[in-house]
Length: 235
Image (cartoon, rainbow, N blue to C red; front, side, top):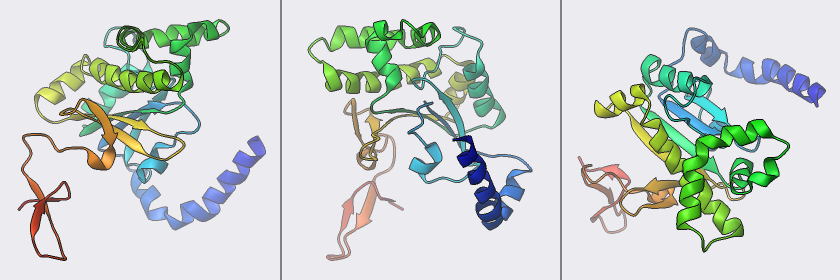
């Protein structure tokens, strides 16, 4: 496998880098990402691919289960990364993106499967709130349905944990930061986002604008009439 990686590096240098030399020369002088993208370490997830972004657009934090330890629970890299993104880079958005078929969430539901992975079991303690919520609210679910709801509840729990971080709390209070809860489906490529008015995860394109946002409209070309929609801001 390593030889394939080496071959890929040669291809990148000869083809990709050459075609985007200006971009990489610009990035050599610094980075100005506007989004901190927190997602799982799962090899099937590629943040830049699924968001169609380029190098320099996303500041990425990855770990098993896309977990955000509550502030003070640990002094690990997650805390430092979040603080640097918000205070140092002044990102405008933070996305916590879970995904379907998440192995970490499977382990959370079946801790006995982690008997040979004590470090993973310890790490998943940061998802204890998720485990308790699922155990309390969804006793009627099992199998893939239970896993799906666990993935969604875990993303929401990590959004709550984010708000315990001082840098995040300050930026939110100053209306300089927005938090987004997403779930990516590996099999379909769909991304669902949490919609606060309905308290549900909905397809990203159906996400409602905040209630305080101005109405939006789109022109129906066939009739010339205006209708409200989440496409173009009403000027």
